[in-house]
Structures are given as structure tokens and as C-alpha cells.
Image (tube, rainbow, N blue to C red; front, side):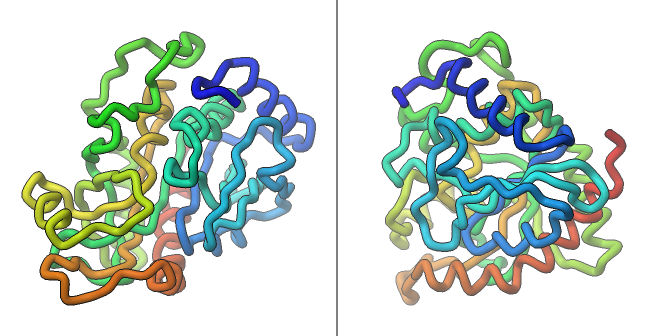
Length: 280
């Protein structure tokens, strides 16, 4: 696949998926590092490995199973990505966001993006959940915007508005669901870096100064492409490690995966509440 994705490549993947399933998914969920357990909630699932879908990039990271499940999720037709693709794996931004384009082509109306994120706010601890209210597109600011290249007019305008990247109504539904189920949560701003190295203490202090609450290596490019195509987005971060603002602790990927075991039940509860309340 070239740097810039074409509508023909997107449609090849979408048509392959249509040929494998009977229902039309209206909701999509992308599961981040260590959060794949939520896929167990998909009923009557058709399971498609990423490697079998035309043009679909394959995840290479532990904690990302690399499967697409299509079935019923909490009573609604949905598709769930068990694992995602990252820029640091060597893919282009077009490839990283390719699944979002396919989802849009299949008729998905809203996407729930989850991720494992490092704490920047000193108030956050591993196992916490943060509803994303806004983001800082650090990677895009440095030139790696996923909309770079020929505009796909089939989806949206050349210069899409990003004043509300995360849907306010969906955030309210998530808050209501969390409160009903007694799940503690934070709200905050997520910042995306390219990775794969974790941040230095000086990096984190800088990110805190510019207003970020949690940091990760995904989600923002997907959100931008989703909003370009007028798809609603709910973003949820599972906090996987403490804010290492003074260099006193070491961050490891194993820690991220372990935190997922605590986070998945919380995510599942919130996402279930949101989906059950949706009118599609």
C-alpha cells in the first residue's frame, strides 16, 4: 500500500467484509493495549483476522490480537477491532487510519476508541478511566496528519472542523453510565506522541505544562479521520501507569498489559451503558 490510501483500496476491504457478514454494524469499538478482553462480549461474532482482509494492516504488538469481530454488542449490531495499528510499527498514517475509513464505508455511525494511556496528571493512578474531552495532536502538528495527501471527497471536506472531536452527547452518556454503575472516572485531555519509546520525566513535565492529562501513541489520528467523515467519536483512556514526573519509576509494556485486567471491567460497564442507551 502506498502512503496515501485510495477509495478503491478502502472499498476492496469493505466489500470483503460485507461478503462475510449479514448484519450492518452501526457501532465500532477499537480496543487498545491490554483491553482486548472486551471482545468477549460480542455475541454471534464473525471473526476476521486482520491478515485476511484486503489492504488491512496487521498489528505486530503484544496485547493486540489482530482480529475484527462483527456481531451483536450489548444488543446493537457492531464491529470490534481487537487490537489496532500504530505509526511506530512502521505503517503510514494512511494505513494506521485505514480501518476507520472501512468502518465509515460500511455505514458505521459512531466509533468508541479506547486506549491504554500513561498518566500525566498526578491525580491519576493505574486502573483509572478517563473520558477524553479533547486532544492535543502533537504528531500531527509536526507534519504527520492523517489527512495529508489527496482529499477523499467521498468522506469529507479538505479542511474539516475539529472544534468538537469527541461527541459531547456521547460523553454525557458515558458519565451517566459510569455513575449508574458506580464506576469512578476522570475527564481530561489526551495527547498523542509517535512512540514507541515511553516519555522521559522532562517530556511529561512539558506535556503537563501544555495541558495534557494522559499520553499515548494512538487514538488522535483515528479521531481526526473519523471526524473528517462526520462519524461521532467517544474516546476512553485506561490509565496504565503513574505519572513519572521525577524519574523515580520505570515504565514497562508489561505494566500496561497488567493494568488492562483492572480496566476492562470498568470499560465494559461504561461502554455497555452507552450502547444500551443509544437510539440508532
